[in-house]
Image 1 (tube, rainbow, N blue to C red):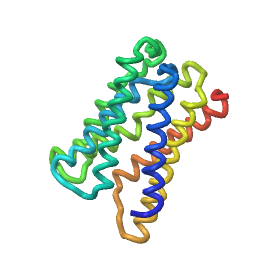
Image 2 (cartoon, one colour; image 1 turned 60 degrees about the vertical axis):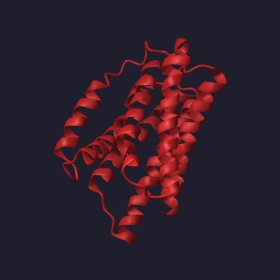
Image 3 (cartoon, helix red, strand yellow; image 1 turned 180 degrees about the vertical axis):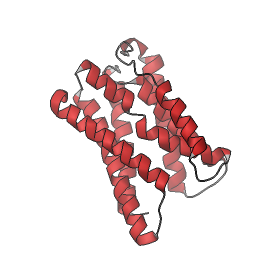
Length: 203
């Protein structure tokens, strides 16, 4: 594992912890898109089914379990414990317009036509667009709390570091995964859109 992937993983973990702490400390999920969090929970569930079939390393297994656990904890806080504070009136992005096309694409473009591989591919495609409901919510309300922008910043940093990781692995390990790279580029571009929103509306 190179330093860029490790830094990317830690940035991803920081984003998730920032969001969870924000909800727990303020006892509110105002400004947070429950739909984006549901999509991320779906991403981690479909991506990490290999926990049931293979062991790569203690680090790998631990991080996967943390991601899954935190994703469902966030969904629970938004839709159950602090449901009264959830702004469903502004969280109106039609997620079926993401899930259905992504599902179809994962069947058509994948590395291997097997259930686990198709679900892994689905998770890669879905992660690239899962933040759209959150960005849509920010653009619709014209508001972004400081803590929410920190969350999005670290998610964007995670994707940027992973792009550098893929470049590093291509040059030094000969590794090249077109599906992951294209999806990662799309996701990074969307986070660039967030930084535009942050500058114009976040403050």
